[in-house]
Amino acid sequence: MNTFRPELWVRVPITELQAPKQNGPHMVYMDRWWAVDADGSAIFYKSTRYPQCNPNRSVVEHLTKSLPGATARQIPLVMVPFKISDYE
Image (tube, rainbow, N blue to C red; front, side, top):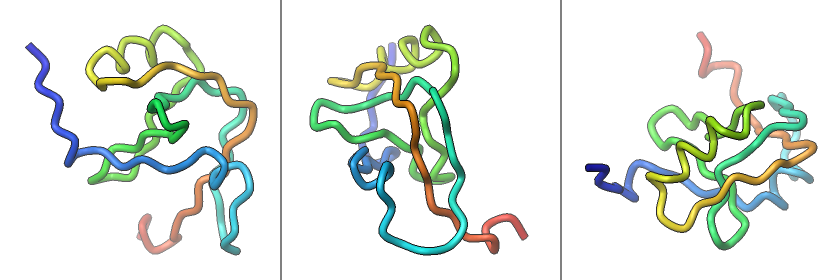
């Protein structure tokens, strides 16, 4: 049985990811399937800030089964800001 724990997830509006306001490095994701909540926000795993996306739709559909209200949505272009220091 899957127990949903909302404190493990972060939601970021897709509109912010398609038109980032901050300068600096961004990871660019093209033509990926994303786990998206009912409000149109992309879902990220909180501890790693890892986006819940994949080029394979069925992978994301499987993931969304454990995220209440989430669906798989293909998004052509997403830009996720990151800090180089996160990788040092």
